[in-house]
Image 1 (spheres, rainbow, N blue to C red):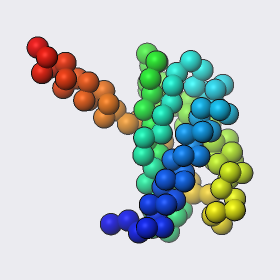
Image 2: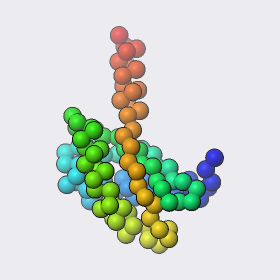
Image 3: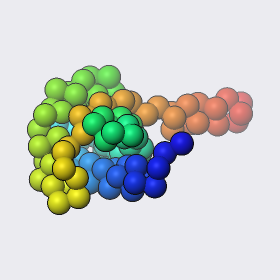
Image 4: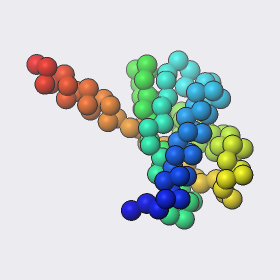
Length: 112
């Protein structure tokens, strides 16, 4: 069970990371749309699991690998945004959130 503080930090990180991907990381995502669907921080706030959905791209694994290569840059940009809310910026681990693809696949199977 997450504490209220963890939930607030999850929401803060999700909002700020979403803005970073939309506004400042276009050189990484290129034409793809990157959406931060969920962020979960550990109780000691040292690690954040970031789940992202990728749209308008054929090779999602290549794009997630490219995002992981730029983790240090993303963390730096995040640090500039949250420096007044948190003492330290958590380490970021990016995961592909394929739940929307799964739902779409189920819908397609049900339509048949």
